[in-house]
Length: 298
Image (cartoon, rainbow, N blue to C red):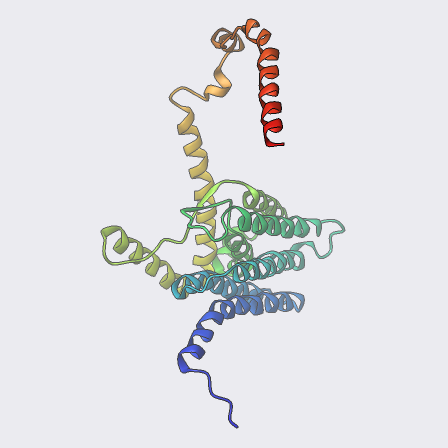
């Protein structure tokens, strides 16, 4: 007796359900391949593989929302994969590039991976599964792709002509610490803007995104690293400027208040001790009523 085939619609639904996880596993594939390439000394391709992983990381959430197949399993899987693709893989590239011969400099890679893991764990608790206007702290994919795109940028004629003589080992080490702090901070960073053609803002955003994507394909070694550098810097500068503007009118009231002013405005409440004298009689009256009720029930 033949087993009846599953309806075609049910098969299609199953395929749609696993589609976001397929993007996430593709992210994992490129993240692991980046680690393998870094250990083989192919740092350019290691950087590009992390770019591919980042592209899939941006798409898996969009696919899940589009197909309405988001789940807690998918969110947890996404965070675990991001820890590898944007934590371990960029840390390995930095180690192979600058810290291979140093005795203790590898701890910078440890700090980096720790910050990525903490950032992802906090994201799952604070913002996972919720609509977000901005990210709390620098997103780990942006930080990982910024670090990974440095080496392809360092192979450009512009870098070799004007920037080659700078102490890049120290610069990258300090940058890794700074990016780690930004990832675990609460500095707000903007999401990828939504494209559309119904409003002027949507059209402007669409033109900007498409122009950036076209430039990234045309001049990847220049545009990708520069774009992430601008994104990271703008988020930090914007947060500092907004913080200063909030303090301009009257300063921080919690810091400017004088202790004597707080004592003068403190509300002093006098206790009416006469009220406490009647408390025992009230309690006795309540107990007698309760005893009478129990006797009636008996």
